[in-house]
Image (cartoon, rainbow, N blue to C red; front, side, top):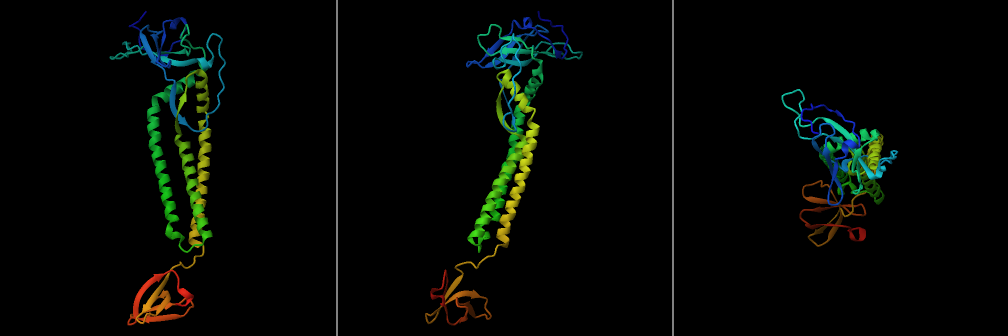
Amino acid sequence: MANDALPFRYEQHLVTDEDLLGWRVERAADGRILAVFGPCPNCGHLTRQNVEESVLTLDYAERAAGAGEATPAPLPPPTARMTRICDCACNVAHANGSAKPVMSCGSWWLVTIALDEGAVVPVRAATDASLLPALRAVQEVTTAEESRLRSSAEKWIAAVTALVGLFGLTGVVVGKDAFTGLSPWARGCAGGAALLAAAFAAAAITQSYRAAYGWPVVVDLGNDQLLTTWFAGRRTHLSQAAAQLRRGVRWALAALAALVVALGCIWFWPRTAPAGAFVEVTRADDSTVCGTLLDSTTERGLRIRRPNGTVETVGAAELGPVRIVNSCAGGTG
């Protein structure tokens, strides 16, 4: 019988199967459990409790294996039942000592829901009190899952930006001009080290950000076995996150070492004179002089060193067309 005069008091109400005889399960068209409803065991008013079969949480490593709880004889096995916390949400005013009453009597209790649609008694009193910490964790995660997802996404934006910036830095370090004059071995060493640095840095950022913020995944909590497994894995995430952070630091140091190798190859490897730095000058009498252009000692002439080492000056009066060539034919011009 409904009790409108019952004052608000937040406390656990110990229920029995008889207290829940009038409770029913609301299911979707595919049989998925949506909610349970019935009279509040404390105040007697009709109340309804939504049931979440999965939660969005942060996965810090591979799923930890959890051991199933021993199943009391009267209840279905853990894989065939679902235990949840029910809070009175009767939407009936209950005095709480203030001018504004509370639309609930404040009681909460544990129920076990049979997953089998043909169960004669679909909602029963839960007897496994050891699940309470896990159930409270489910409530916490369910309440904050949207903000967790948004916060994680915002932080991963910074991670992606850092990755793009790293590739930009690598491009500057090993740009086209940086390889000018380097031997093929030096180019291969610098380019390979730069690629390794980018890969190591990507691994470092991924490991570090996953240690700090995790990865959003949907975890199935459709029965007590899955709930116990999820809770066991959740309690070990700190040690997993610490291991990921250590790996992230090591990858970052490896990336730094690879970049140092790339820079060392570019800065300190001996360089050769670039090919194709020859000019061919045609005189007024159609003779040509080919070689490397030198600094002029006068204002009206070009000084050219031929491939054989001799230096020739072409005066302005006899200067004809000048063009850049890859080599000097015959080696003498």
